[in-house]
Length: 299
Image (cartoon, rainbow, N blue to C red; front, side, top):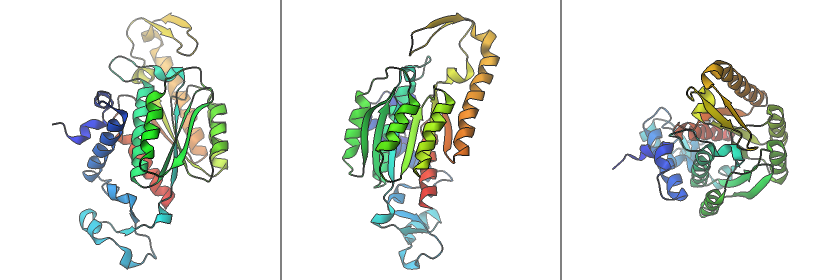
């Protein structure tokens, strides 16, 4: 039998039967890995506990967790576990791209969104979901009921990438729909004008939401290792171009790096966490970023 941590790899996750099973096994594999890593303080139990802070009463320390982790945790109460996390998934046509041997960017995004939703609800926080392309196509507001994960997963399973990208319009509309402040997690290939993306993100920050940008790209979109000749087709417009990738590789890589750096620096200027991920990477990096973000919000 494969170890649970195996289910953190996109290739293995794609072979599993249902989205709910994928989400559960990704999270279980992730939690198993945390127990074996320097991040073992972030355990499954942090849904009911937080790290000790100066001034906390000693009677609230959980000594069992201290014995296992060598860290002080105190029991949380209901009013401390009320994070509202909204996961926004880009479902524009460009997200349907996959190079040989990899899942599509949209598959990766939906697997990750399902796992994040499952993890958020396991922590007894509230999870919501947005699917968008030229505008918002699905909006499920954050709720904390455990069974809500099935509704979120059904929406992910039924989504099909289509149309162009309207990040600015869509995310502005999301910001207008959200109520009190929370955490907004965006999963996108960001194939749009950087200025329009950053302008939309500024709307969330203006409303005092915390934001985590997960920039998902296919490995070949980063390294351009496509052989001696290739036909490129724009998945949103259908336009085609025949070229020799090896002749363009260096300039292409420089352009992609400049594009990603522009978004990254723009995010950091607004105190937004930015993580670039490729679809051949395990899901634990993104899930760990979420935990770090959640911990910082909790203080």
